Figure 1 (cartoon, chains in turn blue, purple):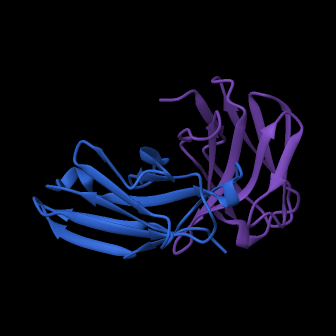
Figure 2 (cartoon, helix red, strand yellow; figure 1 turned 30 degrees about the vertical axis):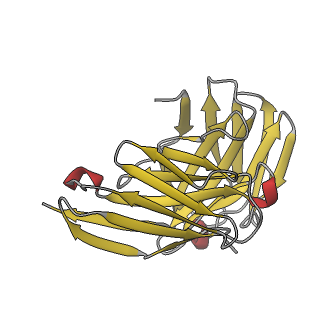
Figure 3 (cartoon, each protein chain N blue to C red; figure 1 turned 120 degrees about the horizontal axis):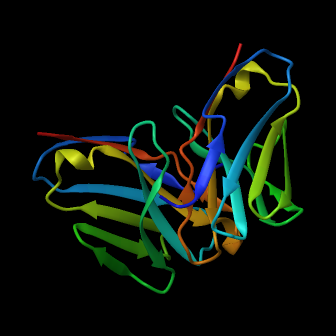
Length: 111
Length: 112
């Protein structure tokens, strides 16, 4: 089964609102990554958070990590229509180089 | 874009025929990955490679084999394609932990 599971599966919001997506994983990790995928395209890396970090920011992105709960969240503030995409979390299974992804959250930002 | 290309980009093949997808990189990255993406399943790892001739299975490796005879090329082979292997296949590369992965544009494979 897949390592990460994103929640919700789909999210629809209005432009300017914040969007929060969650990821839960199963095994111990060294780091967790978030990726974005525009329809029909390859994934693009957004941000990486290490296991000894609790929060990280990059522009309008804020990522948190709670290793005790094996969960992470991605917050996109002041969303734009261009943020419409699917978002995936990824971890190295059991600390190996086996990079595995969740099923993703499909975000729709309405103008 | 990172130097990673997949070929072909689109392919239609008949059930029972062999199919090989190619992933080529110009970045000299050690790790290469093959994923398939299907609605409702996200990305699932098929196989990955941690060096020339070094490969390991992912979560959905049945029916697939891989080879890496050169750093720059990672081949995915469907020995006898089945309709359940109709999917979009993505290749990814990365230099190692804790670095990001770079993805190819994908190959849309249809098995009829």
